[in-house]
Image (cartoon, rainbow, N blue to C red):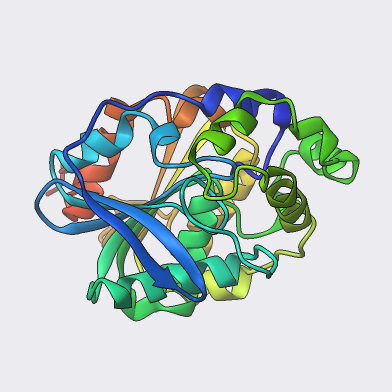
Length: 285
């Protein structure tokens, strides 16, 4: 998840191809939330990572818009969405997404989240299961113990100052309603990193199908992704007469945290059959 190491965050500031979008801003829980709508088909909500925005998600949004009606959101204090006087927490961000869906009269949708957005999507499925059809969670964690040890050791060392000269700070000033608000956003996101997170029971109780996408060199450990897959009912033998689990796990090779979002064609190849509930046929079928 992006919650994350500042030295690699700069790599996420990629220019996306131009889109013919609808959208604008809606009032959501006291903020003006910016969103863009593109494409046709089943509704799919896209949620970005920490310090990111819609453009920095790169090519995956237009790729998805070739197949779905994509609602790309910018979360509290990110991009063109205003910040408000409250902390940034995963439950509150999930409630914001639910309120956005109500505001645009979107009863239920599939959700694709990356990094911080993946955890928001997970909380949305936990707190508002009636609103989520299927969830694609790229670089997701349900427990802080699932992060790589190096990252866990780095969190207490995070300071606002180490983020202020990063390229995404300039991107923030270009888009934000308050160009001087970046230090406050960083402060809130550092506090988010330090929030307790242990949701195994909630994940195990989920009925929403989840596609977990992780890199083999991600900020979460492979063991954590496998543990989450097992909590969701996955990991059993598929040729022994029992149906496959509704949830799925995809591990991208030679892929770090920031490299996940830079492989839109590969992501699309996993996302489309999952959202269509298509599975490969085995020899005994």
